Image (cartoon, rainbow, N blue to C red; front, side, top):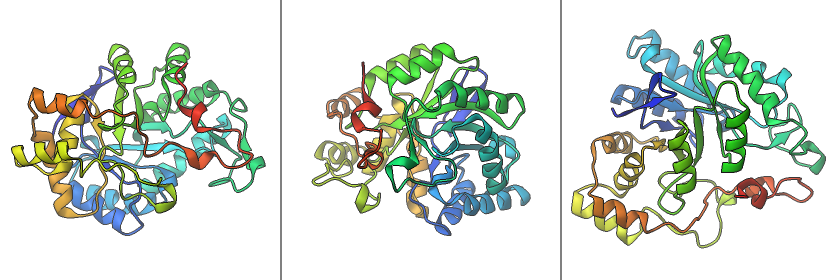
Length: 318
């Protein structure tokens, strides 16, 4: 397994198992299989609605001593309905209970979007809270206290644009260790990568394979395919790799954590083997040339009629 240093003090496995879109039942089986294959990094979130299932798998592996807790990296996230400081610890306590662990290795703010407390997802405009209703630092300071209590080892964010990340970095007592964002050859975000390298922040790439299996309502018409791109297929053929392995090797070569999702044992094995794959400089450059700033997961599901959130505001650069 390949590792990166995180916050200069610890190591995080460079490849993890993503669990978004894994249904109850299959998520637990995938996690159990992944642990037995050698995965040591599991990426979770309450909104994925499968943390209890995953917790059964993690708890079973720990009790059977198939893996030690200190060798396992478990990430989860704070959902949009629990950003107020009085809700942050309760949300983490629920996640710890469901995942059957005493602490998280990494706890992330999932989106810079606020919902009314207790709502899984707003159905009416008034069920959203305004962007400035809960300052980011209120949520962050509550998370910092959880680090001090030993409930999580590191904290970070997801889906923060560069403006938000810089602002948080400048104000925080405990600096963000991670920004988990969509990253793949069609959306390379080089400015974000450069900033994070200079400021000791790691990036986790979600949807590193293009997220072609996400639900139909979340898809756009005529989406480009990463796994079927001729450049990717040609590099795969020349190196005796799968297209997925090429995409993961490219992301790993950039120094980003990658969290592909799969529930199939053979695909889990292939993805893990990508940590041993090395692309040539010319192959890496050919993939670099594919950037088109295309988002598969653009947050459009928050841009409902009457919502105070827009796709443009989520990703604005200035």
